[in-house]
Image (cartoon, rainbow, N blue to C red; front, top):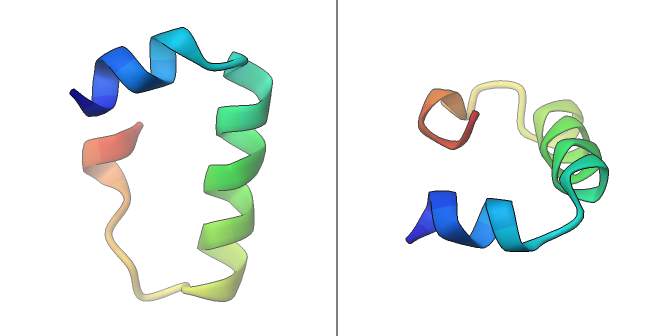
Length: 34
């Protein structure tokens, strides 16, 4: 479902959101979202 959601969204917005989360939560494991 996460992958389908990412495909349906604007890809650059998705990447920007991931970058924002990485900056605010550096210890969070985001590998499953990339």
